[in-house]
Image (cartoon, rainbow, N blue to C red; front, side):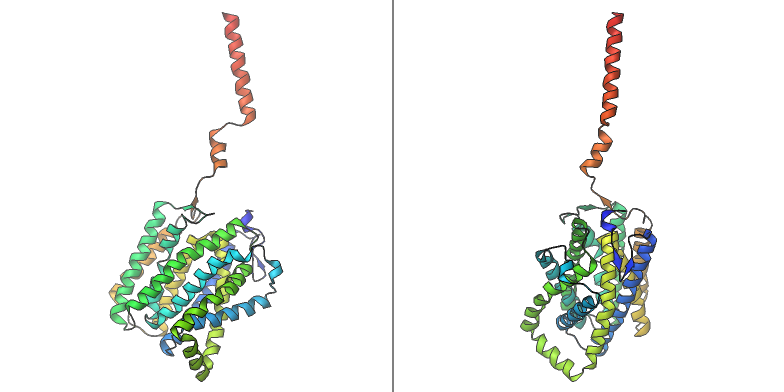
Length: 355
């Protein structure tokens, strides 16, 4: 068993002593459940109820996370990393969540979803620069990511023609979230890699505690804090939807952290893309939106990209070769050196006797 796979649990279920396919199935199931519920709730709150307060909703979600983590029995005494480890991670995490949720005020959910799905390419590129990772990927994985990006762009363009809720501001917001996501997954993987004792609960707890203060300035500067408070006060049932969404997302968050710890950030990004495709189809079926030929072409390219990525699943990514591996292949063992030296000495002695 690898060091970064030891003592890994998912809501009390041991993952470390299970084969890879069972780990993948358990983590993916939790992830799909959590974020499918999240997608339906977000579509309902933003597009049906017209509540577009992404920063405030992320703020409320953070407190729900902390309560659920407390119920899981996690305390600060179980931390293995210093608080400063999570400052950069928390800023990126909260910025990504706030921009993602806020962009739904300007984009309809499928358009935002498809933009976010393109994050696999920047995640792969950024993985080559994050200290502690230095990932390198084979060419076919970049081709797979490009197919995804092209397919998502085609779908988004088609969606702009059939759905009115589409604007440049929303594109800029979701693009900012996309850039932050490229750092987020790799930073999380780097922490798991450099300290294998890090648990999913610790990472979620610390990033939430450190990240919540980052949400206050944008809420105050935009006036969203008071607008959202008044709107939710007049419609308190919105809090019920938010709490239910946060509980489901909590399951998805812990599951995706497990995927990152076990399979890496880029592979996890591909899994999240598959989830987004399923969520997208559910959105069109539940909320009865029209599908065009451009939508179909985009979905076809997305499917091709995912298939190309999953074909060589036995080698999801390649690491830079380590000095130890080079030494093992280029230098003979000490015992072998002694044997060769003795044979050479014997040959010299025989030649001198012949002379």
